[in-house]
Amino acid sequence: MAGIDIKSLATMLNPTAESDSDSDNENCIKFTPGDIGKKPKSDIPDITPSTAKPVSGSKDIWDSEAVPEGPPVVEHEEHRPQPQYDICFKQNVATEDIFLGMSGKHPGSNDELVVTIQLPDTKQKDIELNVTDSRVECWTEKYALRLHLPKPVESKEGSAKWVSDKYELRLCLPLKKEFDFLP
Image 1 (cartoon, rainbow, N blue to C red):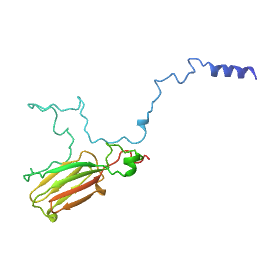
Image 2 (cartoon, helix red, strand yellow):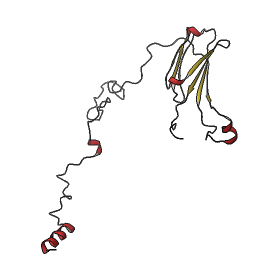
Image 3 (tube, rainbow, N blue to C red):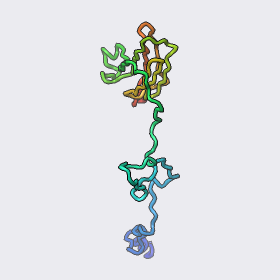
Image 4 (cartoon, one colour):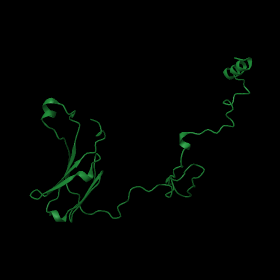
């Protein structure tokens, strides 16, 4: 090893302040993971104090243009009465669940949501039904029901049954399982 090699090694191990390129942060451009890719366009307007328009002569807290639109508003008020309904949770259990406790089910774990709607003096052909993952809507000539469900359901896998002697509609809607992929 030559003397020049030892000097180069010493310079590498103990750099001087002038040769330290990492300490000069003023000329460096810093990048973060948020700088990668295109910037998403936001639908929410910028309402900082510098961009907010003062509302003159009004006691409103915000400008109506600055508030993003929410869910669609029902254009007319419903005059039909709401039918009686009942919401129950259903758990599918077998003998190994009851006696051996092998499936990991407990009293708080539910499999289905059962909605029973009483529609007196109604025929099956007069019922209009719309079920989404979070809502049930049922209309007849006499009744109208818009019901938000307590938990999300699998609306495409549900079933409906009309019990004509009791004038009731029974909906069995499987609940969305949050951890369904776990064994």
